[in-house]
Image 1: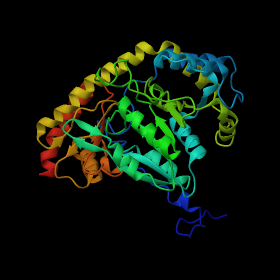
Image 2 (image 1 turned 60 degrees about the horizontal axis):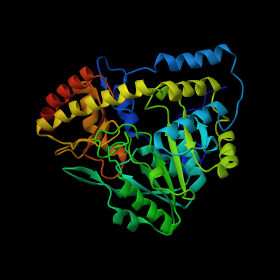
Image 3 (image 1 turned 90 degrees about the vertical axis):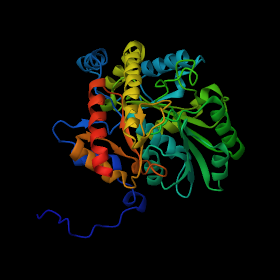
Length: 400
């Protein structure tokens, strides 16, 4: 039997599938992934592997034969550990029945979207924004409406009047990522109250991505040692779905382990959505998650300290005169605007080949992102110092 020819016309697919946008981040990464000596700052992960105490928990689980199907909602021990973690972090009692274990934060986001938005619906997203939100919404048949963040010398901010004005008859959900990827924008408690007021007024859902909540750099922004959360301002009946991941805090990006937090009233619905998407999360991965939550605070503290040092290093790009870069308030990305640049993807590819540095193009992050680059600074200082040196040397040559 002959293999299908790539020149043959393909059968028609659902327009949502055919229209799924490609990732500008992956496009650049594919252009330089195998380049010797390249310093990769293009994706949202650091350079440290998962610590041994987490890996050992998964190894023990495998050795004990925990290789069978398991609870769709997550094993009880992990859900109880998540409740303890949240109780300690937010100073509020937390119920294990609120937590549902997922295959990474992206799976949690997809389930949340499936719960509240679909064909013909609209979702508001402050932009520039992580592109996977818009992609997941559009694959579900919904339409994204970007609400531009404002940038000045103090950093990024959200105009609540602009957000309110963007609400239309088809709006069903507001997606809030704070601290934000890629800008580092971090909502204050006043911002969160204002967003929640808009959602309440119009009967909207909020999908809250607070995965970078431990990565903040100004004590005034988060005196509790974390970023402000909707938990600080919400009531029990507010329509909020929280998505989270183990990836960032504990260097577990490759484990694909996350969680969705929602009212226990939705438990059976979420269990069904897990069943019909992944049929659950491997138990050894969940054992690793328990180890991270219960023994990972010192490792996380080191991660935050490394990111704080990296934030200082990447801001040296301002000295080139080609870059505008207010200090990001949270997360672990720099999002410098490059003066005179209108094609950030082309610039990113040239930096791969001419400077040996991998960065993400700002155009990948939607409206307001063009002309910028995203650099992940959750890496060792020597790599970041060399990357800054290479970029600073290359920019005058590339942009003139």
